[in-house]
Length: 110
Length: 111
Image (cartoon, rainbow over all chains, first blue to last red; front, side, top):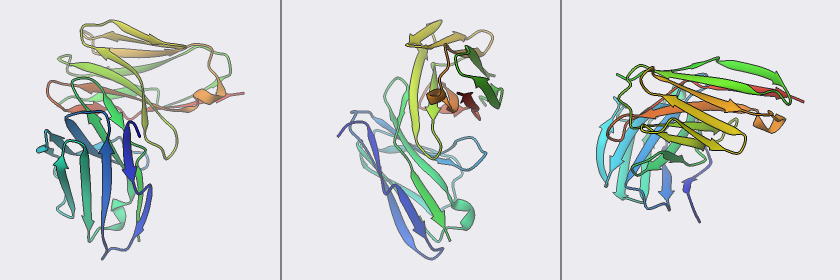
């Protein structure tokens, strides 16, 4: 499999649930990103990892917890989310050039 | 902080027309600029990447130009087709791993 993959593609969860989003890149890139995309809003950068180290955290609430065990995998752990957290969550990777995006996870918080 | 603006926010054209999408950015010290296409509810597909030292890039019916000194880029789409209907996003990369996105132009090509 090539490119950037994300699972699950769709997720519905209650506010008390705990779930995780997974991203995997098969491009040999050293940087990985989480973005949030809400309706009618521009992409919001959430986290950046470079060589497994977190280099950016754009004031993201602690109910979102990223994990990067290696340069190919990135997780976003979710707990006690709010309905306003419903959005498309996009993962991307890069190395020295442009970004490559996964298909996204459509998250709905009830 | 880098700010990226895309004009127009929405555009509707009849099939076959040539069109131009605009992107402007406030800090000219960029590393590269990338144009993406996004279909509803889907991820972003990279269309063209222009390095800061380049003036333009071409791929098929698409041509992107970059004028770094004036903080502008354009995406030219020739002979538009209904399949080109999507939201087009531009993103600039500063030094490091920070990417800044515009709000996009929603394009509709009418058959």
